[in-house]
Amino acid sequence: LADLQRVTDEEAYRHWQEYRDEFIRPQPPAEADGPPTEATEEEPYATFSEARDDVMEKLRQEKARVEALRIARDLIVRLNRPWRQLEAAADDAAIPQGVDLAEDYTQDVEMMQARYPGAVTYGRTLLADAQELSAHPQIGRTHWPIPGAWPFPFAQAALLVEGLEAADSEDPAVERLTRRLYETCPEPFLDQEGNAYVFRTVAIRPHEPPASWEEIRDRLADDVRRRRAYDRAGELAEALAEAARTDEQGLAAAFQEENDLKQELGDTAFSEPEPFARNRLSMFGGPPMLVPNWIPDIGMDAALIEQSFAVADETVPQADRTFVHAQPERGRWIVAEVHELLPVTTEEFDQQRELAFDYTRTIMNLEFLANWFDSDQIRSRVGWRDIEPETDGEQEPDEESIALEDDNADTTG
Figure 1 (cartoon, rainbow, N blue to C red):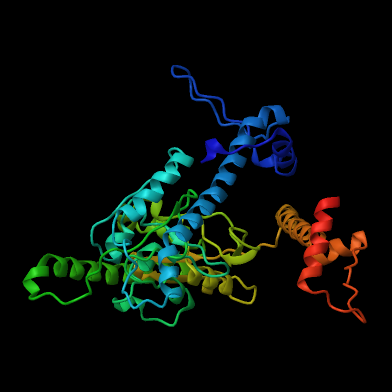
Figure 2 (cartoon, rainbow, N blue to C red):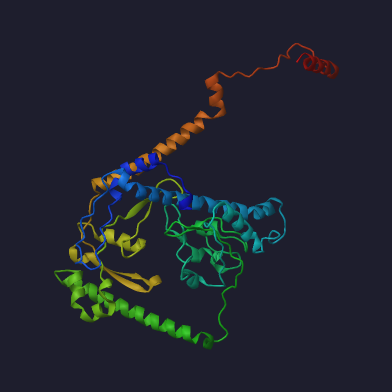
């Protein structure tokens, strides 16, 4: 979709003026036979002409994300039209006629492919549980970005179908996404690259226990090993945290002294992420809202972020700023050491201020246009006055006289 987006030079120039520090000159390529060149300090482009291609590409990508979301929502409306017609007719049929056929999807895909060449594809999975769906290389990491809340994962949404236990919940998000078999999910799901996904569930098999434990012997053995490993990792994490609290040099020194643990986990196990905020501003598909942030090198974990900011308070002793955090869903433990709580910088404030200003300006423009084209406002501006028929005190004309008047009007007209 990015190749289909149009970006004017004026639009690109305005964007570059506001965010010119984001567009950095590329590093010179190293010579194959020469000595390795040292990396120079990152430097923004000096002129718009130099940065033009990069700015154009960024804006095309941003517009493509918005366009992908619009197309996905359009598809959802089209595919769910039979369901709305069924509800309007109060039909007792279980499903609308024809929606259980694959052609119901492929026809719309073919139509969209003709309109957006190469941008729309169709796929289908076999029966899978939530764990298998999460491991899917393409759709496993997609989610529904709920404004002001944690994103809803596709692997969970795919099972929100009437007839499965997963659909029984009072969660508003679950209520919104729960649907019938063959009914398209009412919300598009997104991945980190900005691709949008429209899906429906066409077959279900309710959870049931195996006939005998021999059927799942290998899985049981694997579960036992994983549970033991997880418990053992927790013990090692607690020991490492205790060593970090008693060591004046902190967590880094304690990890370096644990040779066996370091050799087992590798150097990548220890990470010093860049400073991060508790929340981030999201403007995707709606008004700006604060949503839970993620930690560089770690990922999204709202509980870990809250605990980190809780111990970052100046009143908390340094020894208590090292803690152990469990991530059972990922089968791992994290030993964290919080250094300090940093204030917001002027650069960060100015960036958020620009976002807020752009959003406010857009809302004010929309309100102005809606008000300007309002029918009552148009009448007020042009001095419109309705002409009332003068019927008081006069006899109502009969049909014959009306016909004569119409005839005369036509003749003289």
